[in-house]
Amino acid sequence: MRLVQVLIPEGNRDSVIAALDEQELDYAIFEETGRGEFEAMVQFPVPPTGVEPVLDNLRAAGVSESAYTIVLPTETVVSTRLQALEALYPGDRLSRDELKANAESLAPELATYFSFIVLSTVIATGGLLLDSSATIIGAMVVAPLMGPAITASAGSVLADRELATRGVALQITGLLLAIAVAAVLGWLLKGTVIVPPGTDIRTIPQVAERTSPGFLSLFIAFGSGIAGAISVSRGSGSTLVGVAIAVALIPPAATAGLGIAWGYAGVAGSAAVLVLVNLLAINLSALVIFWSSGYRPEVTDQHGAVRASVLKRVAVLVVALVGLSVVLGLVTYGSYQTSTFEHQATAETEQFFDQSEFSEYELESVEVDYDSQDIILGDDPTVSVIVGRPSDAAVPPDIADRLDGRLEETTGQNVAVRVGFVIGQESEPIPPTTGTSTSAMTISAPRAERPFAPVDLDGSGGP
Image 1 (cartoon, rainbow, N blue to C red):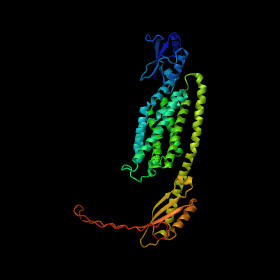
Image 2: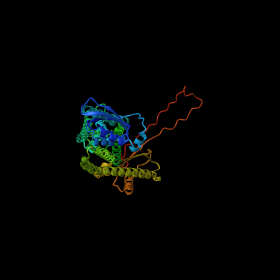
Image 3: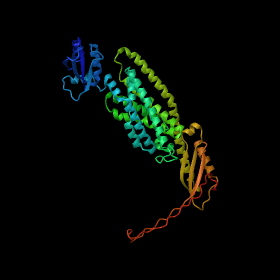
Image 4: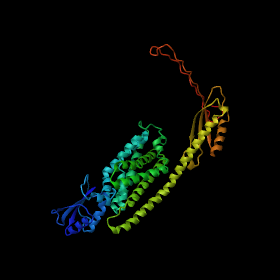
């Protein structure tokens, strides 16, 4: 429920009262003596969804658009007409004035905004390098990116050019700043005792997760934007939803910065694509939700122009997303192909060494080197196999070629196979000693050595 207070201009008291009586609202009128152009102040309770239509009726009755108006949330209202009002105005959608006020409050001052961008990026960059999902989530609580996204969409549907421009500018500058901060921080940390020399960020799971964007990333971004628009238009849960929006933007922006710092163009480019896709999806979903919720400019004459502007923005965002979706499709297809090949190659290798002729050998590990970039560049996959053998067992000279032929026949891929052999020994278990307390007697035995023969990579039997 909302409590609305409006100043009535001179000469419009009767028409305002008639408009309130027509809608069967409970109201109270107070004489206004502080400002000469107003003769009274009226206040009345109304459900959230009724604020906008009631104010529109009052403005039609002579209340100026710039008249002093306050909308306050109320805890409890006791009125015999309350049930009829709630039936007349169901739901909890905020008025356009409340939406605009919420959007403005979500876009903080520049100093505050950029400070939180820097802090959240520093925390997220540390979380990526530490491979700590908890740290990354903590950075999202700090990131202030929900406000600009909602501000841009709200300004677009309400014909507030200044609000929309501010939202777009804050998003772009904020994300560029996040990438720059992560790049500088990565460059400073690279090669120090904090990040040891030779560290390959591409092998860090949290980084790798954001360098292979697929269609699921698009769904997450759409969900975040929809949740943000709904939470702001309903006036609930905006803080937690802001975390979801930040999760879709700050970690990939920090990943792009780390890619720049390490000189990995693939990492920087893939993460930047993910940032752009998420940004477009969040703005598109928020814009559609606000428009479909019925938010329109206050001036009726602007409805047609705003509708055309919104459709144009939606069309531009959709075209951009479709273009970037080609990249997402390639990555998704590549991930599917590499996962399928890895599963087939591992299964076939295990079956190959399960044959009776290899009963003396033991398959230790299978490693498949094949990723989405290999598919795009046309590079062949590599399968590296480590096999354990007894010291007196001979090495089959053609084992790599035979496994290569089997994998190529099964997968249809031109595969490079490497087979390495190791010689290992295992210690015999020490029988338990009966009748002796272990606290009074310690039994020690030398551990058996595990000598390893030189790795045979080509299957020829030589070192």
